[in-house]
Image (tube, rainbow, N blue to C red; front, top):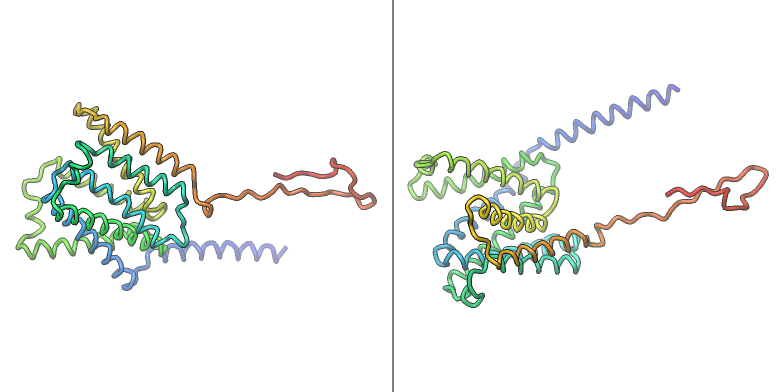
Length: 292
């Protein structure tokens, strides 16, 4: 009895120490890990600026179609970074291809040939933007998952670098952060707040899911925005958007119902326990008990 009581105390102490270790790990910051967040922050900074150059050379309709290439570049970057340990699977590849097709279809306002008839510089910039975005997203996912740090602390490190790069760019143009908020109204501040929560939600998805789930979430938000605009502002829903939404829904079903082999739960065979008396061996099925 004394041993059992002592063991119980020891287990409680171990649990308390384990909790303390988890808390310490969640709040630990080291210079090397912090500096690593500068890489994706710089990529996001460049990506956001390249997006404006894309819109300078491309018309909005063409840009909304071509930027869907981000789905393909994200999948390729994910495969290169995590392919050895997190295989995608053939059916999920098909689902992602369907998602890309659905998103492109939903954004088409003219023929695909007319959409692609854009300046070469604009097309090159879209490819560059989609590639940078994919690499930044995969790098961020890797950083978020590599440690037990609190996700809020990880976000602080990532966005601190983003603010640093943004302020350097402003200073290079002779501007200050206060110059950015001049003329803002309540709607602008509300949009900023909502976008901040969007960034936090994306980081949660990348830490506890992955970039492929984020791709589907982004596509879903595009279709939900179309539906909301139709209800709130009476914006017409074009046939291409209906077709794109149906194709994307099929892609989501195909992706969700076909996990790769490494993610499938393997159920063990039922265990049979044979009970016998000391004097008589087991001789019939009624002496066995099946445990599922």
